[in-house]
Length: 335
Image (tube, rainbow, N blue to C red; front, side, top):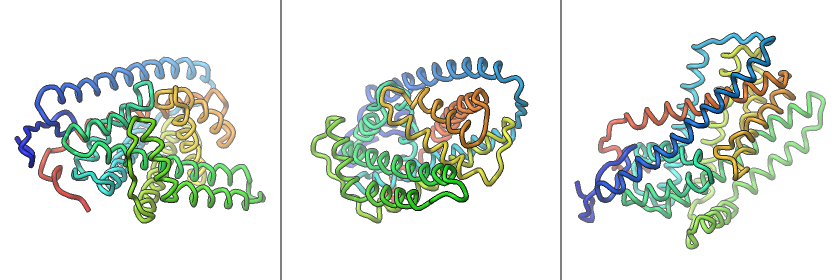
């Protein structure tokens, strides 16, 4: 088929429209192959570690409930699609022209770039994919940078509010927590801060002339969507805990959400760890032991299970978006 400029285009893996037939499709397949290789290596290592840790925690009553574990995966997949939708809207607001379904598909595919050593593969890969399909690579980079900044700020806010309240206790002084949370949200999500941070990130990735035209309404909608996403991740981790026999109560769900958010943020900010590997598990182990009261060994096992759960949800989401029918929806304009 041909695009509106008369260039020949084809559809690569994940529904990504690329100019030219073989080379760009080959790059898409190669990207997924490399990323999935590192995912397989990660799963192998995590499974070995899990066996060792569970062997050392035999005194704990591990009681697995498959239906809860399956539900945790479903929640995780829904969360990933929600996050992809948030990015898709930011992408369109920064100059992208792809439809929402196709944008979510590309986001899920390129999300695997974070498992390749070096943080550049996720953001840079997203920009390269969109540019390869004839869309704006600069818009993809700007939107991905803005999306990641809002994700980290809202994650910090969720962690600070839930974990801070848990540490303060029922009789604690919540005023410092409220003030810190307010300052974090007002400054971290201010349009000027987003523009500055996205531009700096763009220069780090070799794009010196990026402009970010998001207004306060765009950032507010993205922030609300990502706060919902963090809440869903908390629900998923809660279901995982209950699904392996950890006796957590519903009223502990806020702090469980905060533990997941804090672990994610810490893992992301450590640049040398692909996908936050080891760092995220270490942070989650410490927080689960401190705030949920688990023995360190049990907390470590749960942290490894949480990593495996996340990878399984990402693989399930990948299979889902690759199976989506490629219809006219991929070309429609989503307001």
